[in-house]
Image (cartoon, rainbow, N blue to C red; front, side, top):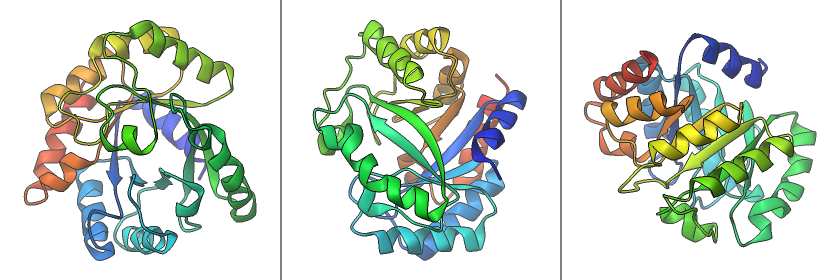
Length: 247
């Protein structure tokens, strides 16, 4: 399966939802159960990653448990080259564009490049931009978050990502953010850059998700919200997915 083609083909039909599972937030077995539920709810892919992962073994065990319970493609969403897994189907080979630390911009990618070459895992090049408040990823990634009203800077980053040859662009407010990325920023980025646009952070309900999709988000990502709604996760997630698919 070519993951880029898989995503692009699905986007021709509808807006998509990706579930983000953090190996540090539950056991591997629980992650497998979570994966089964999000597939049943209609999610199109599972991203695996987090800012506080302890080891690659933790990532391996989580992905294997996910694959035992789900047929969805699993895409690594790594915080460093130390937390990669050969069991994933692909990797968002992403540059944290507004980090002050060159490690997150390119040096971790240099380390991880050998892993990608040797395992044959599919790289999906992506520009990753943190919008305030940024939350844990902003702190760990040593980011200067883009101000919520600084639309011009966000568009500039998106254009630069496109001209550098990246195939995806991700606007991120941070896991558990009190406010998601503003609709005005999403619209401006989408109007200027014809890349598949992922939006995540602070999206907790169907109304908010639909608003982001209408503004121009192609893929809505939820992570923390999944963890906080485990008891009724399938029904909860269905409302979000149905809301964005109808845009």
